[in-house]
Image 1 (cartoon, one colour):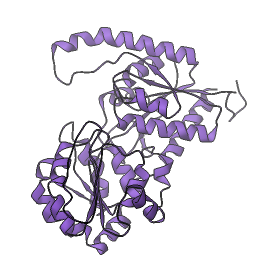
Image 2 (image 1 turned 90 degrees about the horizontal axis):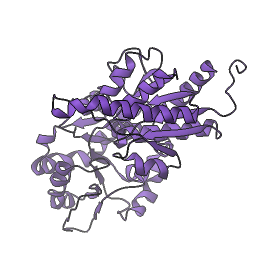
Image 3 (image 1 turned 135 degrees about the horizontal axis):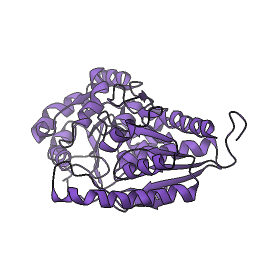
Image 4 (image 1 turned 60 degrees about the horizontal axis):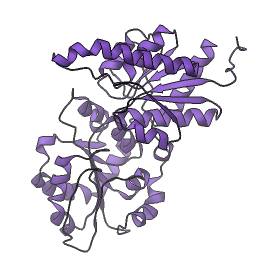
Length: 371
């Protein structure tokens, strides 16, 4: 046993989450916060070969171990019969990682990888911390929250999970500490934008969004005629050609590595309302037009609701976002400086931006308690 309140010499923490940026981004932000607190901590990320984690986790400098994916069909299909066997194999692989790491705690962020990791941790009596990224919880975290009675954390207030405590969504320090005004000139120069023109940032998330891409680019001439320049991230696998009809740039990029600079360059953003996007956009006080993804269980609409309710953003259904809607609404909003300032003020502070540090300290408290 360690002295009260002390950590063992080298704490070992396994973070499980993958598939999309919704799971990998908070995982990396939490790992970074743990390392800031104690650079000696051993951190292992658990993922599957199907997800974004195979690229972004190693790029962030963290060890990644892969286990077999176990997709859970939402409807009865023949694939359902294969789930028990696949789950046993995945649980066994997760257990091996936890054993070899001598894990002090498992932190699950949801997704395919988390369910077998939760089962493996429960079997070896490893403490579990559950973090739910969305306003509507996923299957893996619903399962875990039934048995994890002490450490269930959520990104949004009011998330319907047993034993839940709202701590916020861990986001990158470069975003949570961003001073948009101070970086605006540098950001616009970085993207080749005019230093003074009203600027619209468009993003459909890590993979892009066809509806957003088509609706905004279709109104490019109208935006330019209104004196608006555009920075448009279309997604890594998408293509888009926008004719330059005026002196202001319409910059098209497949992917933006420096989201801090994109937010700093912008006066308004058109975006999806995934948990990461809502937390980052509202956290930096950027007025937003949120276009929830029209599939899933409605979590994206609920993610944006706290910000929209206080006037920090506008919500429009995917089907209603058309070229005509963009023409009629975006220039009017983007050129209304008084309204943009009010939206920015309203958005700031609605969603916590210190969750990376808060969650990291909760995790280390769990390690201390188990020591």
